[in-house]
Length: 184
Image (cartoon, rainbow, N blue to C red):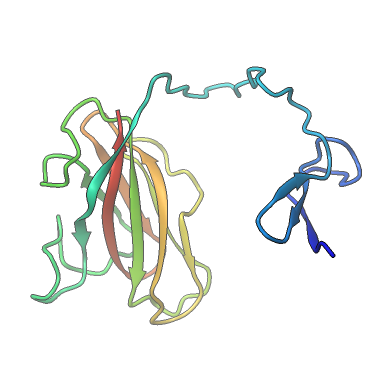
């Protein structure tokens, strides 16, 4: 007996081909329940303003490097910036030149592990990381819904020409950022 679960990944009509409906079989095998609308091997259309990183290569660091930790105390590595909880203000972080292992030039993006801890009790709180100097993206990378939670996520962010990113926390929290690798 094979067990399966249908999951709707988007689309208006789950019975139509290409709607995003997929079937996940127990044991890790994945089978499409509907044929994809794109032809395998065909170039996918790019939305207006899309940035295509041709030839970009990911370079993992040998070990994760902590570059930011807002928690006070001698048992934590020093933060780049104030040792205070983040809330409502933009915090700019340099991903390079701080013993992180990320080069000081030519970097397109970074892979980071973000952690929030000592969170506030404000429901619907979030943390966002994004390329420094661009408008706020109106999306989040990590969400929390109560006090004193510790949550983590591994995510990617583009960086500006100086290899900087921006952090924004919607409510009071401590934030930890570990760099896992970078894209050239």
